[in-house]
Amino acid sequence: MPDTPESDDIFTLPALECGAPKSGFPETEILPQAAYQIVHDELLLDGVSRMNLATFCTTWVENHARRLMDESIDKNIVDKDEYPQTAELESRCVRMLADLWNSPDPTATRGTSTTGSSEAAMLGGLAAKFRWRKRGGRGLPNFVCGPVQVCWEKFARYFDVEIRQIPLRGDRLTMHPDDIAAHCDENTIMVVPTFGQTFTGLFEDVAGISRALDDLQARTGLDIPIHVDAASGGFLAPFTAPDLVWDFRLARVKSINASGHKTGLAPLGVGWAIWREAADLPDELIFNVDYLGGNMATFNLNFSRPGGQVVTSYYEFIRLGRVGYTRTQSATYSVAQRLAAGIEKLGPFELVHDGEPLRGIAAVSWRLGGDQTYNLYDLSDRLRTRGWLVAAYPLPADRQDETIMRVLVRHGFSYDMADLLLADMGRALAQLDKHPPSSSLSREESGGFTHSATPRVSTPEIQRRRAERMHTGKPGTQDG
Ligand SMILES: Cc1ncc(COP(=O)(O)O)c(C=O)c1O
Image (cartoon, rainbow, N blue to C red; front, top):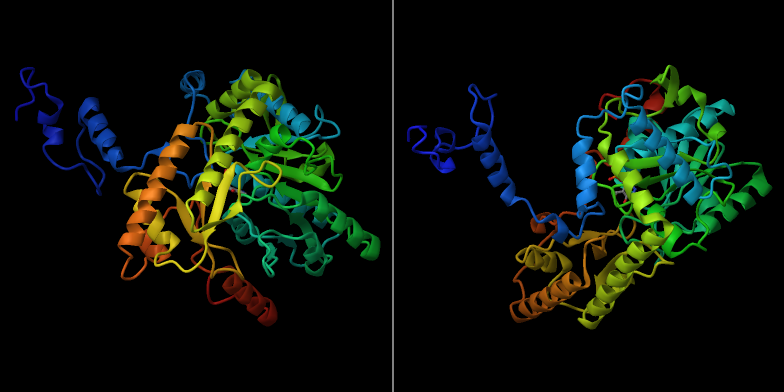
């Protein structure tokens, strides 16, 4: 069709008369409307983010936050001198979070925004590694943890630290204080409890773990710090379980990471790493950048990053305050509890986490009880036909034979949506009962998104290769 004023229908433009460019770099330009339409239409195939109950991240953003994101779209957070007020808002957020998490000196301690909890976790781990070396640590450092998010496996590999994941003994689902001592030695740079486990949503007992490390120190002299991975819990418990002690109220907790883009309610792309006191972040990790005629400390893995997520974090903090966050997060927990009660009533399930704010994040996780003719992957698959993404996956090491399902309840997931999901679950179960699958789906076949990643080379294999290298003193023949 000719590209003339008479034919201004977007779908008659030459650019839309053939498929979208897919491999070689496109040769010619096309009209912005045409390019927009192509991209917009391709994205129709994506899932609906608010029905993605596998993600921890923000999927509902209010209009003022959107406006601030738009107004900040051209601001690079690392240009502190060029955008000093964005830098100032970041510093205020750091002080506010240090206060929220009970740092002994919130106005003087150090912290930073990051791209998410993964970067923040790595910075916490690096600080622990540098402090350990400063104390005279030699050889291969290690850290001790329970079932952790994949960012900790990445930290271990990328920065050559041994990860010591405590297996889930018996019916345990979290790292237990009485298991810790056996895994620590003079090369342990930190213990990492997860405050809001990725698998189940449950909180690990940070205070109990801290006491276990006090006992270890009394017996052996080993003084092992804690870094808390509070990716989701860090923006929940201070408001909905304020008496739960997991943060800098425990002297052993030297650093905390949390995701602003999860329960912090900010749009995607922001996390936070905060240290208990300025001295807990070694100077060797700090690089100065220009700032208002002087300089400002930065300690990030990235250099350039967008500033809007920090600006909107500050907006959320001052808009909601403690009262508003408490109201918002409590509402989310109420929906989680309603959903948990509904799931239990459906019959075949046993709850693992019922959305109780003292036990974990605003999530519900469950397993299939009894002898059923279908599995949770089949159920996940059926729910997908209605647009719901509900993750089903095996438990971590030593309990991989058990499959669980999890719904992450986020701001914007309403009572009504919970009821719609329950109705669809009821229909899916009835269908599966009536037409049992001749052979159930596997995890791979159901293709259920779990908001995680699996390493190509397993951690035991990496450890085997490392041990071989250390034994022979020669570089390995394979990666890792
Ligand atoms: C406990 C925990 N830690 C770390 C992360 C990684 O966070 P991010 O996605 O913000 O990098 C997640 C993500 O789900 C998590 O659940």
